Image: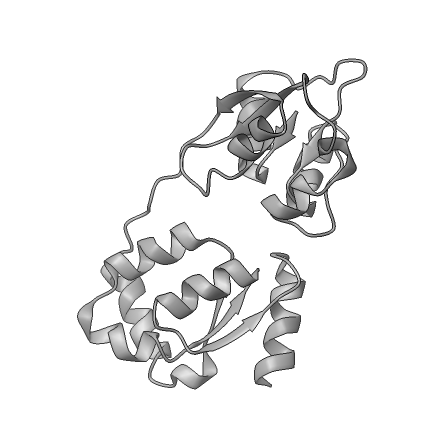
Length: 192
């Protein structure tokens, strides 16, 4: 069974008590997901590289032809895991246990951001989701377009750094993973 996020772990546990069957392996896409499962009383293993590619490189997912894998996730996202596991010969049983929904950003928050963006060189955007970045950029007021693109970005992966570049950001640091400490370290190394 493979969990794609802390939200997937919490939502699955809210729907049904999580139990690990004998000879069943639980995998978590990253350390945050592994810790969320641990708080729910379930042990899981996570890769060092905390993304789909890191997960797919794990020994437990190499020789899976003929096996069955439960993918506990949400609709949307990159949709990389299911097809990759199927191409390796596994039967993938997908359980969408929660839904990602964009949150409307209230005018007061945009005003607070506008105040901070008066000095955009002092602002860092911690980027761990391309979907979230797209949602923010779709909602941003036109008057913040130029100053928003001038902030620094600490991206949790090269893929997210590319998403930031594609969106017009130019000051980008790449963190080792999506953990807050890693994003902060990348920021300090690149911009301080």
